[in-house]
Length: 171
Image (cartoon, rainbow, N blue to C red; front, side, top):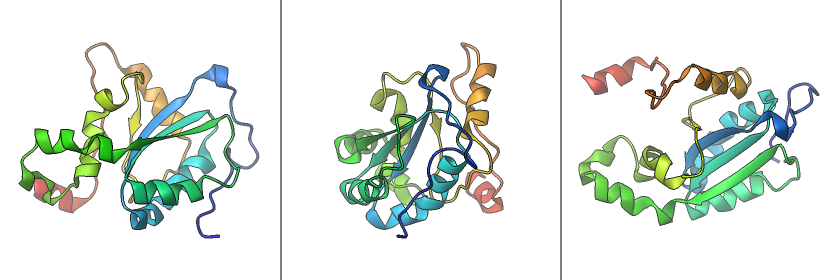
């Protein structure tokens, strides 16, 4: 039905073996209704991918329930791992770190990605991507390759925001 996602790989191309390394992505998806908004990103991610992927998803219970239906159909393989992180177990970090009025533009669940090093201590690097307004047009491994340009002084990389309204918020 509506929640079906494509198999890994693009146009029958083989998925790379485990020995080639895994791409790690972190996404925040909270609220069962929000899962539907994230499906275009997930579909495009899986359609274009050619490398093994671990998708770490910070999700609340309603989202985990709905995502479990999305990922249950057996299209996943050893080349895809889905790691659910229970938002409920970490949300107090956000409330302790930020004033209550901080969440007017960004919810507590979305803010959890700022705590990625604490939430995923065994993951050395990860791509953290918005979920509801992103469609990938190419293999995420190309973006992953940019980590090769990092040195010991680099903490993160970011893309330039292209939505004009975003600049009004930052001024």
